[in-house]
Length: 474
Image (cartoon, rainbow, N blue to C red; front, side, top):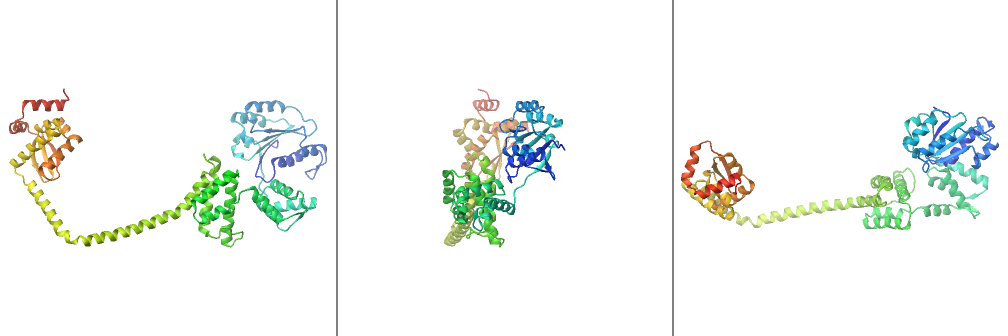
């Protein structure tokens, strides 16, 4: 790992300038005491004030191209003016283009002895692997609540401020581990007052973000319209949806812990632990989706609809079950009311069976007569189909399937087309009196072709029609 290249990973505990200042004073101090900067020499003072000519800061978000890095490579050859080393700070280093990163890599591989590079980034994983391997990674983590409180106490003591009990704890709990935000809040509260009161802290912090307490009440009441309306008001006020969502999740989390006896304020008294757990999962996912959403408020609105809609689904299932039971009851009553008509229906069924039985016992002569009637009625529906039937012979009828003999494969293919089959079955069912299904059978006997011709005696023009239908002639 190179001592001339450091990667600082930001976790919001201090500003990047604070971190860089600490690192630079350590490297540039002309007088080190126990490996700590003296904070008195000209180099330390200049770095603290941000006026050192040997510290060059580059914003990679706006100077991310390969030409900017090539310029850097030329200037890095120059020696420092007054400090021990010339330091180049590349802020948001992960924003560099691939070409620019490759150009920077050449300098990091063989840096001048007087040069040092600090790569400040919130996403070191986005840096090139080759760059990460040539620099030392230093992580800066969020401050804990006790650490932030200790930092604030030093300020209070140094500035001789008067604060009520609980003020520092309230500030530390709201700044998400950021010392900078904590100091800024304390400075804002102390302006023009003799004593900082706890009520002032709460008013200031809640005015910076919209209060999600109302939405929690609407969620407890499963009020979809009210919940979506509340999000709409937040958007109209110009408040940050992400900050609002984070605050909502924080309140839900506190309420869940309060119900579990861990501590915290219970702001959701009408919700149980399981409800709170589900809401936390829903809105954590919604907050993650806000930055990439087509409509920023849509993830929060969808979470509200999903939560409030679950009860409706349960009510709908309940109504469905009731409807099924009512339907079953009505069906039983109808069966009891129609009990006297069973005999009549049985007689109708018997008549149908008898009719079917009669149709299934057609003699050859009767079947031939029915066939002629079928062809006659088919002619009114479709001339081409009637012509095809003239070249067929009825073989048998089993009460449902009417078996017809054909003499050529392509003739059979044509007859089994869906259009012709549906017309034939409809006509045949009407003539015979029962549902009929067409079953065509390819004949293996050439003699039968002559027989059917003699039996049906087709006219010459009919044969022409058949030929035209089969071969597609005009």
